[in-house]
Length: 194
Image (cartoon, rainbow, N blue to C red):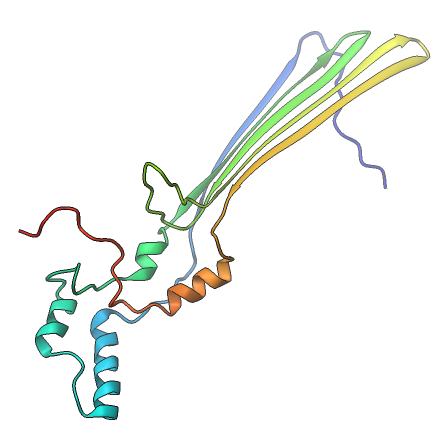
């Protein structure tokens, strides 16, 4: 099998081609996890059965369920906090081809960006976004030095930037599935409660 790349063609003027693609990515289905009311009911029953003592008072349970003070009584939907509903990707391809009697050329470049499905909490010092960027460049130049001699100059480069999680995707998913909607808070308010 022989793999060849595109070459320049003799033409009166250069031919320019461009293509822009934009896409949306969305999970087909994310699992529905127990909310704080369901989890606290389970936790309450389990502890009461084993010890005969209720671990939380009805007032404390009510504060979690009604989100009266989320710093002290959190009720977090971790799927909604960690995953975006959808994300995007995009691609731009451009090439120029042409040439004359002695020189023919084909030059192309492309840029691709794919954003991750995770919804990061960015700060001025840290950006935990998950994404992938790639830039490709190719240049094929054919120079005819004489009727029997031709020089081909082929250049190609690819540059990639990947911003990933500190753990593999399976581990992250497992952490999300096993984290209760309480007692962990996603972040604390900066302003005092009214």
